[in-house]
Image 1 (cartoon, one colour):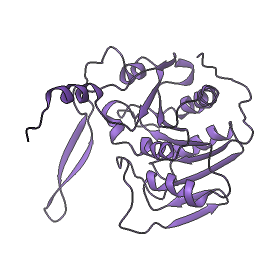
Image 2 (tube, one colour; image 1 turned 180 degrees about the vertical axis):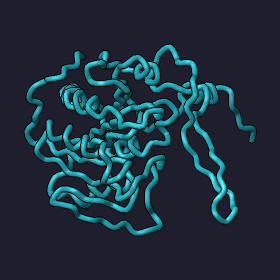
Image 3 (cartoon, rainbow, N blue to C red; image 1 turned 90 degrees about the vertical axis):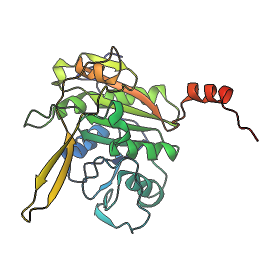
Image 4 (cartoon, rainbow, N blue to C red; image 1 turned 135 degrees about the horizontal axis):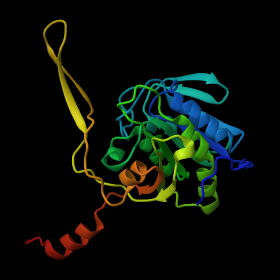
Length: 270
Protein backbone atom coordinates (compact mmCIF):
# COMPACT_ATOMS: atom_id res chain seq x y z
CA UNK A 1 0.00 0.00 0.00
CA UNK A 2 1.34 3.40 -0.97
CA UNK A 3 0.86 6.09 1.66
CA UNK A 4 -0.26 9.55 0.62
CA UNK A 5 -0.16 12.87 2.44
CA UNK A 6 -3.39 13.81 0.63
CA UNK A 7 -5.58 10.72 0.12
CA UNK A 8 -8.77 12.64 -0.68
CA UNK A 9 -12.24 12.01 0.68
CA UNK A 10 -12.35 8.89 2.88
CA UNK A 11 -15.79 9.46 4.43
CA UNK A 12 -17.95 6.35 4.84
CA UNK A 13 -21.74 6.39 5.04
CA UNK A 14 -23.36 4.80 8.08
CA UNK A 15 -20.02 4.07 9.75
CA UNK A 16 -20.35 4.33 13.54
CA UNK A 17 -17.03 4.57 15.37
CA UNK A 18 -16.29 4.21 19.09
CA UNK A 19 -13.07 5.81 20.37
CA UNK A 20 -11.26 5.01 23.60
CA UNK A 21 -7.71 5.19 24.97
CA UNK A 22 -5.59 4.57 28.05
CA UNK A 23 -4.08 8.04 28.43
CA UNK A 24 -7.35 9.52 29.65
CA UNK A 25 -10.14 11.76 28.43
CA UNK A 26 -7.92 14.86 28.37
CA UNK A 27 -5.04 13.27 26.42
CA UNK A 28 -3.87 15.04 23.27
CA UNK A 29 -3.68 11.69 21.50
CA UNK A 30 -7.42 11.22 21.96
CA UNK A 31 -8.08 14.52 20.21
CA UNK A 32 -5.79 13.35 17.40
CA UNK A 33 -7.82 10.14 17.21
CA UNK A 34 -11.05 12.12 17.06
CA UNK A 35 -9.69 14.08 14.10
CA UNK A 36 -8.66 10.82 12.42
CA UNK A 37 -12.11 9.33 12.97
CA UNK A 38 -13.96 12.38 11.65
CA UNK A 39 -12.14 11.96 8.35
CA UNK A 40 -13.90 8.60 8.09
CA UNK A 41 -17.32 9.25 9.61
CA UNK A 42 -19.70 11.83 11.04
CA UNK A 43 -20.94 9.31 13.64
CA UNK A 44 -18.12 9.28 16.21
CA UNK A 45 -18.54 8.44 19.90
CA UNK A 46 -15.92 8.74 22.66
CA UNK A 47 -15.85 6.72 25.88
CA UNK A 48 -12.48 7.17 27.60
CA UNK A 49 -11.04 6.83 31.11
CA UNK A 50 -11.39 9.80 33.44
CA UNK A 51 -7.68 9.48 34.35
CA UNK A 52 -4.62 7.86 32.80
CA UNK A 53 -4.65 4.05 32.80
CA UNK A 54 -1.33 3.31 31.07
CA UNK A 55 0.11 -0.14 31.78
CA UNK A 56 -3.23 -1.44 33.00
CA UNK A 57 -3.46 -4.07 30.28
CA UNK A 58 -6.89 -5.71 29.99
CA UNK A 59 -8.00 -5.09 33.57
CA UNK A 60 -11.73 -4.98 34.25
CA UNK A 61 -13.31 -3.19 37.21
CA UNK A 62 -15.36 -5.72 39.17
CA UNK A 63 -15.13 -4.73 42.86
CA UNK A 64 -15.97 -1.03 42.56
CA UNK A 65 -18.82 0.83 40.88
CA UNK A 66 -18.23 2.68 37.63
CA UNK A 67 -19.27 6.32 37.37
CA UNK A 68 -19.83 8.06 34.06
CA UNK A 69 -19.47 11.78 33.35
CA UNK A 70 -21.27 12.90 30.21
CA UNK A 71 -19.28 15.64 28.51
CA UNK A 72 -21.49 16.12 25.47
CA UNK A 73 -24.00 14.14 23.42
CA UNK A 74 -21.42 11.60 22.23
CA UNK A 75 -18.54 11.97 24.69
CA UNK A 76 -18.26 10.21 28.06
CA UNK A 77 -15.57 9.87 30.74
CA UNK A 78 -15.58 6.72 32.88
CA UNK A 79 -13.67 6.24 36.14
CA UNK A 80 -12.40 2.91 34.92
CA UNK A 81 -10.04 1.13 32.55
CA UNK A 82 -9.96 1.08 28.73
CA UNK A 83 -11.67 -2.32 28.88
CA UNK A 84 -14.42 -0.83 31.04
CA UNK A 85 -14.80 2.05 28.61
CA UNK A 86 -15.18 -0.10 25.51
CA UNK A 87 -17.60 -2.38 27.31
CA UNK A 88 -19.66 0.55 28.62
CA UNK A 89 -19.72 2.17 25.20
CA UNK A 90 -20.87 -0.92 23.37
CA UNK A 91 -23.34 -2.23 25.93
CA UNK A 92 -24.70 0.85 27.69
CA UNK A 93 -23.78 4.33 26.52
CA UNK A 94 -24.07 4.41 22.73
CA UNK A 95 -27.68 4.89 21.74
CA UNK A 96 -29.22 2.78 18.99
CA UNK A 97 -27.08 0.35 17.04
CA UNK A 98 -23.66 -0.88 18.07
CA UNK A 99 -20.44 0.62 16.69
CA UNK A 100 -19.08 -0.71 13.41
CA UNK A 101 -15.49 0.04 14.40
CA UNK A 102 -13.52 0.54 17.63
CA UNK A 103 -10.39 2.71 17.57
CA UNK A 104 -8.15 2.90 20.64
CA UNK A 105 -5.42 5.54 21.05
CA UNK A 106 -3.59 7.40 19.77
CA UNK A 107 -1.21 6.31 22.49
CA UNK A 108 1.57 8.60 23.72
CA UNK A 109 4.35 6.18 22.79
CA UNK A 110 4.70 2.94 20.87
CA UNK A 111 3.03 -0.35 21.78
CA UNK A 112 5.20 -3.04 20.25
CA UNK A 113 7.02 -6.26 21.13
CA UNK A 114 6.59 -7.41 24.74
CA UNK A 115 5.03 -4.05 25.66
CA UNK A 116 1.80 -5.14 23.97
CA UNK A 117 0.83 -7.27 26.97
CA UNK A 118 1.04 -4.22 29.26
CA UNK A 119 -0.87 -1.93 26.93
CA UNK A 120 -4.23 -0.47 27.90
CA UNK A 121 -4.45 0.90 24.36
CA UNK A 122 -4.32 -2.58 22.86
CA UNK A 123 -6.70 -3.79 25.58
CA UNK A 124 -9.32 -1.23 24.56
CA UNK A 125 -9.23 -2.66 21.06
CA UNK A 126 -9.25 -6.22 22.37
CA UNK A 127 -12.51 -5.61 24.19
CA UNK A 128 -14.04 -4.36 20.95
CA UNK A 129 -12.83 -7.49 19.21
CA UNK A 130 -14.37 -9.66 21.94
CA UNK A 131 -17.67 -7.89 21.26
CA UNK A 132 -17.40 -8.94 17.61
CA UNK A 133 -16.48 -5.45 16.36
CA UNK A 134 -13.48 -4.78 14.08
CA UNK A 135 -10.95 -2.99 16.29
CA UNK A 136 -7.67 -1.15 15.82
CA UNK A 137 -5.10 0.10 18.36
CA UNK A 138 -3.06 3.15 17.33
CA UNK A 139 0.19 4.38 18.91
CA UNK A 140 2.65 7.16 18.07
CA UNK A 141 6.27 6.32 18.83
CA UNK A 142 8.55 9.00 20.23
CA UNK A 143 11.96 9.24 21.83
CA UNK A 144 11.84 9.62 25.60
CA UNK A 145 15.09 11.59 25.34
CA UNK A 146 13.19 14.43 23.69
CA UNK A 147 11.26 16.86 25.84
CA UNK A 148 8.87 17.92 23.10
CA UNK A 149 5.63 16.21 22.08
CA UNK A 150 5.49 13.23 19.73
CA UNK A 151 5.02 13.80 16.00
CA UNK A 152 1.23 13.54 16.27
CA UNK A 153 0.94 14.76 12.69
CA UNK A 154 2.42 11.45 11.50
CA UNK A 155 -0.42 9.39 12.92
CA UNK A 156 -2.97 12.00 11.92
CA UNK A 157 -1.71 12.11 8.33
CA UNK A 158 -1.58 8.39 7.61
CA UNK A 159 -4.04 6.68 9.97
CA UNK A 160 -7.23 7.62 8.05
CA UNK A 161 -6.11 6.06 4.75
CA UNK A 162 -4.72 2.94 6.47
CA UNK A 163 -7.97 2.44 8.39
CA UNK A 164 -10.00 3.05 5.22
CA UNK A 165 -7.91 0.46 3.39
CA UNK A 166 -8.38 -2.03 6.21
CA UNK A 167 -12.14 -1.47 6.08
CA UNK A 168 -12.05 -2.21 2.36
CA UNK A 169 -10.02 -5.38 2.88
CA UNK A 170 -11.84 -6.54 5.99
CA UNK A 171 -10.46 -8.79 8.71
CA UNK A 172 -11.71 -11.35 11.19
CA UNK A 173 -13.26 -9.74 14.24
CA UNK A 174 -11.20 -11.97 16.54
CA UNK A 175 -8.09 -10.25 15.17
CA UNK A 176 -6.91 -6.91 16.57
CA UNK A 177 -4.97 -4.61 14.27
CA UNK A 178 -2.03 -2.97 16.05
CA UNK A 179 -0.83 0.20 14.28
CA UNK A 180 2.37 1.96 15.35
CA UNK A 181 3.61 5.15 13.72
CA UNK A 182 7.35 5.91 13.60
CA UNK A 183 9.10 8.73 15.41
CA UNK A 184 9.46 10.85 12.27
CA UNK A 185 7.74 13.75 10.58
CA UNK A 186 5.09 12.75 8.02
CA UNK A 187 7.32 13.58 5.07
CA UNK A 188 10.02 11.21 6.38
CA UNK A 189 7.79 8.13 6.69
CA UNK A 190 9.09 5.46 4.30
CA UNK A 191 5.86 3.50 3.95
CA UNK A 192 4.03 0.74 5.76
CA UNK A 193 5.17 -2.75 6.73
CA UNK A 194 2.85 -5.60 7.59
CA UNK A 195 4.94 -7.29 10.21
CA UNK A 196 5.04 -9.51 13.26
CA UNK A 197 5.32 -8.76 16.95
CA UNK A 198 8.96 -8.71 17.99
CA UNK A 199 10.51 -10.03 21.18
CA UNK A 200 13.04 -7.97 23.09
CA UNK A 201 16.35 -9.28 24.36
CA UNK A 202 15.84 -7.35 27.60
CA UNK A 203 12.91 -5.67 29.26
CA UNK A 204 13.56 -1.90 28.95
CA UNK A 205 12.39 -1.17 32.48
CA UNK A 206 14.04 0.72 35.29
CA UNK A 207 13.14 0.89 38.97
CA UNK A 208 14.04 4.20 40.57
CA UNK A 209 14.43 4.06 44.36
CA UNK A 210 13.72 7.27 46.28
CA UNK A 211 13.21 8.53 49.82
CA UNK A 212 10.14 10.52 50.82
CA UNK A 213 9.93 13.41 53.32
CA UNK A 214 9.45 10.99 56.21
CA UNK A 215 12.47 8.90 55.33
CA UNK A 216 10.53 5.98 53.89
CA UNK A 217 11.59 4.30 50.66
CA UNK A 218 9.36 4.32 47.62
CA UNK A 219 9.83 3.28 43.99
CA UNK A 220 8.98 4.45 40.47
CA UNK A 221 8.81 1.86 37.69
CA UNK A 222 9.58 3.30 34.27
CA UNK A 223 11.29 2.70 30.96
CA UNK A 224 15.05 2.92 30.62
CA UNK A 225 16.82 4.14 27.50
CA UNK A 226 18.93 1.19 26.41
CA UNK A 227 20.57 0.32 23.15
CA UNK A 228 19.70 -3.21 22.14
CA UNK A 229 20.25 -5.24 18.97
CA UNK A 230 17.37 -4.97 16.54
CA UNK A 231 15.84 -8.20 15.25
CA UNK A 232 16.06 -8.74 11.50
CA UNK A 233 12.34 -8.17 11.17
CA UNK A 234 9.31 -7.30 13.25
CA UNK A 235 7.60 -4.21 14.63
CA UNK A 236 10.71 -2.93 16.46
CA UNK A 237 12.75 -2.92 13.26
CA UNK A 238 9.96 -1.49 11.10
CA UNK A 239 9.57 1.53 13.39
CA UNK A 240 13.32 2.05 13.68
CA UNK A 241 13.57 2.10 9.88
CA UNK A 242 10.86 4.77 9.60
CA UNK A 243 7.93 2.58 8.55
CA UNK A 244 4.42 2.40 9.94
CA UNK A 245 4.17 -1.04 11.58
CA UNK A 246 0.89 -2.94 11.15
CA UNK A 247 0.63 -6.14 13.16
CA UNK A 248 -2.40 -8.44 13.40
CA UNK A 249 -2.86 -9.83 16.92
CA UNK A 250 -5.25 -12.28 18.52
CA UNK A 251 -6.33 -13.17 22.03
CA UNK A 252 -5.58 -16.89 21.68
CA UNK A 253 -2.26 -17.20 23.52
CA UNK A 254 -1.88 -20.94 22.95
CA UNK A 255 1.63 -21.91 21.82
CA UNK A 256 0.52 -24.28 19.07
CA UNK A 257 3.91 -25.92 18.45
CA UNK A 258 4.46 -26.62 22.14
CA UNK A 259 0.89 -27.87 22.44
CA UNK A 260 1.48 -30.46 19.73
CA UNK A 261 4.82 -31.50 21.23
CA UNK A 262 3.38 -31.87 24.72
CA UNK A 263 0.42 -33.84 23.44
CA UNK A 264 2.88 -36.34 21.95
CA UNK A 265 5.31 -36.49 24.87
CA UNK A 266 3.22 -35.96 27.97
CA UNK A 267 1.56 -38.99 29.43
CA UNK A 268 -0.37 -39.41 32.63
CA UNK A 269 0.04 -42.70 34.39
CA UNK A 270 -3.06 -43.76 36.20
